[in-house]
Length: 284
Ligand code: PMP
Image 1 (tube, rainbow, N blue to C red):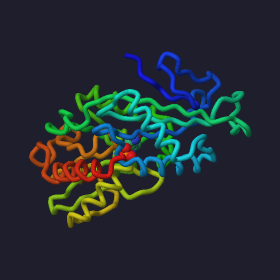
Image 2: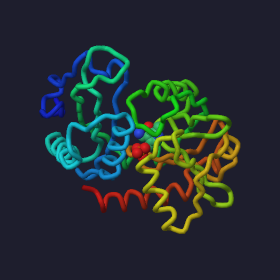
Image 3: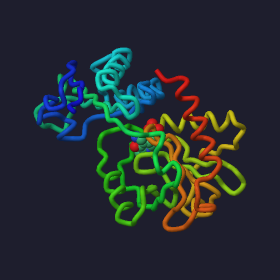
Image 4: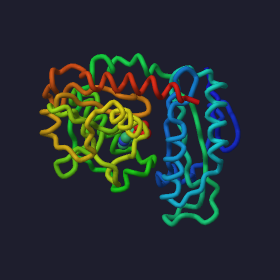
């Protein structure tokens, strides 16, 4: 069945959804994106994603072709037209089409594309069994706080994980874990402290991360936002990841070593439950 896709102001059938070969998203990865999950036909954490999008655009001196209210309406239209109960809405804005030149063009019109993808997010098998993760060098650029479409290294990382018989990779820089290829990384120490890397240019400021840390603090958990090492991760009581499409997902193995009991831990399970409950209450 053909989906309805949004391209530069029009709702079109996916076969007719096209952008220019001169688009700077294609030529320079000069574009930003967001992924918002859909549960029960409603958008999870939409405000957070819209705010981060504005920040990414500002950092790259790009302007949004639509207002944030219009963006919400487009998201809702696509969910409705494609009858999405559970899955996600992908949004991408690029600087637009222009003659190839490294310098930003003065008068390019931004390209905006949105599409939906249906997926079972809640009943994911990994939520029950936990994930196996390997460590790899973080070889991405230095502005990981901007959510750009240059995702080749994360893509290579997922392939390295797959080749090693694992589900994903955590990236390591100067001995410290930065984050997962497409998610934020956490450990729970044997003393019960929840540790995740502090915000900065080195990681993406996850929207799910912000919500989960808020819920953890509200539940009186001790939280430390600081770098942690590969060794600390191996000796942790638990580990997990967060992202818009995985929510909170337990990690049970790191570089071949079992974490804790080698089974999903109670902190991850509790935070997943709280996140799912609270974010669905506020879904739009
Ligand atoms: N870090 C990276 C590198 C990511 O790609 C993502 C997901 N896009 C995240 C973290 C998680 O962010 P969010 O919770 O906003 O999905």
